[in-house]
Length: 394
Image (tube, rainbow, N blue to C red; front, side):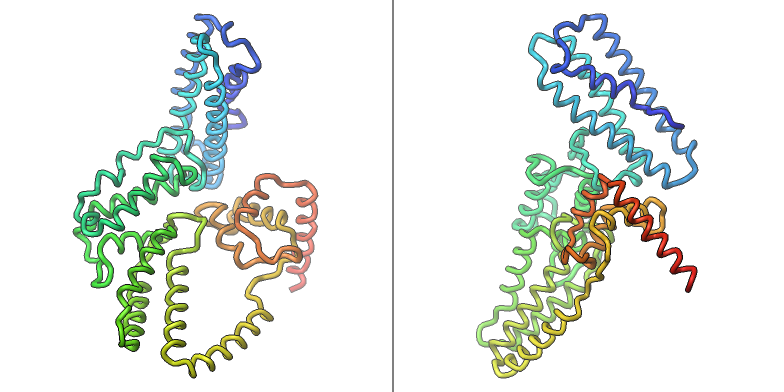
């Protein structure tokens, strides 16, 4: 693509067709038709350009960066155009038609990029401005399917979580990651009957959602309530402990799909459920054997005291801004690699601290990576220079 900004005309039109900067009623028929025709030509040109793009660029990283830059720019322009469209006076039909054609062009080009380069698109990029059709994987249509029908309580919970994202829009933005998640769930529900991956303790729908790291608080409550009912045996505490251990063992033996998660805002399902198992076993042990529990408590307190002295976090003598810049540069240069830069931040944030921040969130690293200060660049370059000298001396 060279150095040409391929969205230049569309960018110009979105800014010019702003009802707050011009008189919408002043756009005549000829001008409106001209813009509509140009938008149609631009759509064909841009789609053809992105079809050929992969053959013009050799480096995978360059292709990925360019695709995401153009998609981000297109989505941003669509948000502005959509906002402008809602402010056009009722009588300015020509203006509305012209801006609508520009918005449509941006939408079609963006949809093509997402479809053509799906594996390269940032999985956390919002797709809310695109026309995402959930019909192909609409779980409401699968309510009578055997897998769903066998567990109506969980079926209702799963369909509710799907609807909150794609239909009611109550659960944040739609992203590639979320879209792929629910396509995977839908496919599993449709074709799970031919699978042998099931257990006596978990039904088919439960296995599907555990495999896909369905870390919704409602699902966690569902599972822990089920476990409590299964192990609650009046008068037989030893059998209850055995059942707990068996449940935990069976749960942990179920495979979990890599890079699959319902929400990045909550801990992994496995971590949360195993924490519950540990606490439940510890509580029941104390109830059944208070004398042993008292000794265990003392040991536990000593262990916690030692743990506080020997934190498992790595102290970095960098600021959060500098850390975000470091990991962003490492990602762009392919020194470290993950499905996205956000995934890298999510992986490293829990294990890092700075002199001023004991706890670092992945979202703060992500936000800082968007706006890099020149001062942080200079300081980090100085640090890397010292590191280079240190490596030479090894």
